[in-house]
Image 1 (cartoon, helix red, strand yellow):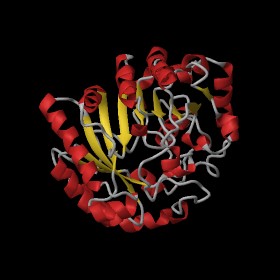
Image 2: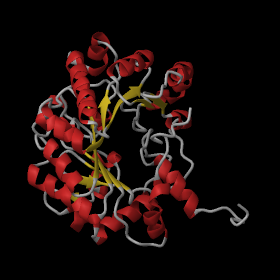
Image 3: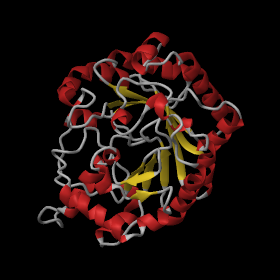
Length: 363
């Protein structure tokens, strides 16, 4: 079933052709989107956590987070440079950062569309939470279990009921204030939790959220999470996923990201071109062209330290663009890049533009 509402299983560069054309003409362009990490810790421990291979230290990292002053300056400069969206999502739990609510407001006021990806347990149900919902384009709750028992097993936390109340709060505020914010669930699909898909559809309907996104679990080529070597297993889940999709209604979209499930970590391009359009910053304020480099070849590909340098200074530097070129020439995408790469759909589009077929006028 095609997702025409959100296009989560593809890309949206068609609506940013001004910047794509500048890039095609050799200009230095500002990134369109940044995934922003805000902390190095988490209050729960999901069994599939990709952040665990990026620097998420769970409870041990709860006091390591992006400091207030450089974070707010980052938000302001992102708008000035021309960033169009930022998702506070990162490698760990953003709500562990006490500055998260202020960052959302400052980013939005700077002209950047803001989003939040969270496990939701720590979401403030006071005025901070209301103001966040007023400024967010979307908020997405990471949830792969539909009951207290399965939540404890899969997320390593007893806080299922707490999370449900936080979701109810967000839905109620959206309705009472008539806010445009989109509220969604994200299920990270693994062999251990596949049977939670249909119960999650039911929970999503009961709570009144706008969508349930089901995506396969990302993993490194070294199989650090035990998923990369099981990508072929996802074919066995097709019937359940199709049933879940068929539960979509006018008010709830069930979206299965078939692209990553079907391609099984394989790529149709030979180099990564999308990094100038999509950046990642870590919970301690480092900026990277890909989340993979939080813990892999990080010294080579770190673009700068936002706690010591301004975002504008980094993006406009020759060193930044030297690394963008190095990504294209030095990274072996078929051997090094992890499954479920967020830049994949962008790369396929840009690679096609850069490598046109013959006789292009015969459309």
